[in-house]
Image (tube, rainbow, N blue to C red; front, side):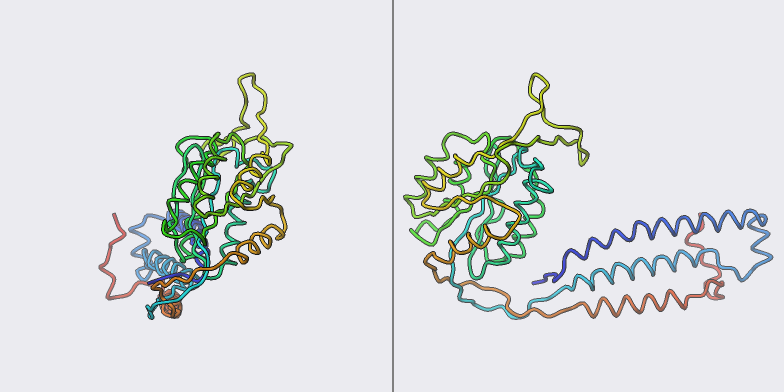
Length: 343
C-alpha cells in the first residue's frame, strides 16, 4: 500500500506553469535576437559551435527535477507489514449538508468550508473509531462506507461540493436512514451519527426517521452552522460568483439557521445539539460524547509499518539538476546531426 505523508505538497506542481512561461519567454527573446543578427543559415556558418536545441533539453531536465522534488516533499510511503489489528471504538457516520444554502458566507469562508474544516479536525482526533461519510441535499448519498482509513476519508472530504447533489433540499430524514443502513445490523449499540446542517428547507420526515433509528440503538447528534439572522446565498457560474439567489420578486433570499428543527432531531435521537463556532469548544464537547459511549472491539487487517521513499525521488532530482547544470550550451560533436526539435 502506498500513501503520502504530505499530499498537499502536490499543489507545488503549479510552479511548472510560471516555469514554462519563463522558458517560452526566453526562447522567444533568443530567437528574436538571432533574427536581428541575420539569416539562420548565415548564423549557423558564423557560429558552428552554437547549439540551437540544448535549451529544450535543459528545460526538460529542470521540469522533471521539479516534479521529483515535489514528490519527495510529499514523501510517498510504502506499507510493508500487513497484520491483524485489534481496535476499540464506536461506529460514527458523519452526515454533511451540501445544499446551496451551505455556500452562505455568514461562516467564513462559507458554511460548507467551515463544516469540512471541522470534520477534518474531528477525524484527526478520532482514535480507534470507525467513520463513514454521508452527504445530502435533496437526496442522500453514501460518500465513504464505514472505515478506519482516516486518510482516505479526508481525501474524499476535500472533493465535496454542492455540485455533487443532483437535487436541492435538505433531506435529513433520508440521510438518517442511509446512515442506519451503513451500520452493522446485528449491533444495537456502539452506533453514533453527527448531522451538520443549517437545517433550512428540510423535508418533513426527519423526526420520524430519527425516532426509528433511535429505536435501533443509534445516537443522533446534530450541529447547526450559520446564523439565525440569515445570509444571502451566492450563485456561481463555474468558479465565478455572479450574484445572490433571488426570489420571484427580485429580492435577495436569506438562508437562516433552523436551530429548532435540529434540536428536535437530536432530542428524538437521544443525542445533543451543538452550534458550530470558530473555537474548539464544540469539537471537545462532541469528542466527550463519543468517549462516554460504550466501545466495541473489532479486528481488521491493516498496514502498520510504512517506510519513507522520498530519498529515491530526491536523489534522482539532484542528479538531473547536476546534469542540467553541466550540460553545455555548445554543440556536441556526437549530437551534431540530431534535429529532433527542428520542423
